Length: 225
Image 1: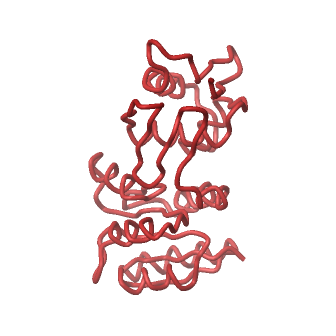
Image 2: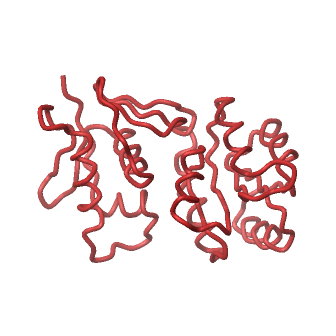
């Protein structure tokens, strides 16, 4: 049974989440403050963690930062009433894998959890490398050779997904589902817009291209000598 640690100080919210996840077959352990939650994360080694950002004892981002410094790569979904872009960016840069703003639909929380849990083994890695391209999963930074790459949160997640699957054709439908968490394929150029920005950052003007557009099919990330 998949074990989930829920760190949430609001009892009503916690009970709603616990009830829904339990009905779907998850084993849910609950902590109402950050210090206890951190101790449980260390001792019970759950498959995934849901953590509220604002907690008594120790705030949620400190819990995540502490775990990441200890090389714990358990997938973490951050819950918060703080929905501004800067707040979401900070939550992801501190080591959160996904960020959900309150109030939220419980079905969306479940969908995001399922998406995170599809890659539990991958989460143990702290650095990804494809040729000269390197991605630091803790510092949330990118580098190609000696050149640093500044990535926005969505660009980081998109590049991470591609670097875990080098030389594999990734369709737009796959990217929309795994990176944007869509459960359907809308009529949108969202992937192409973000991919264009990412290619501009990854492939410099004097560098051999690594991100390739396969016309009518999708995209491939390939290492270069």
